[in-house]
Image 1 (cartoon, rainbow, N blue to C red):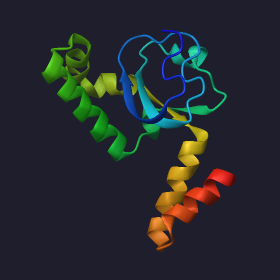
Image 2: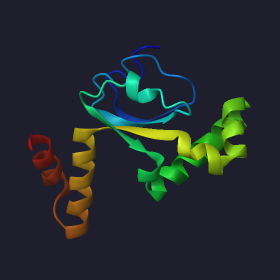
Image 3: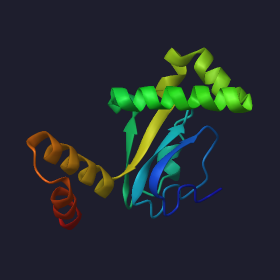
Length: 131
């Protein structure tokens, strides 16, 4: 529909079909991975709260999670789109983009930094939420 991931507050979603206009309006948390072979999403994305990352910006966790969830989806549902993507993963993976709220990204980075330095992650969350 027109308002996919509207008001999403957490979790992860994978979109294998086309999005409508106003995708991610009010999205304050979570991550959306969108298969966008025709590069249509930038013109349909509500960028008030989110940023768009290309596949080249994905980290190893993004890539392994995405491939794993696609494989599970293909196995459970016989999804033709998932099967086609997995059959030529090296080509199709570059058509995925990641939609992520700016504030959520900032909070995740603060938590990671707090854990690495031995600081309290809860305090880091509060500081990031007010920053």
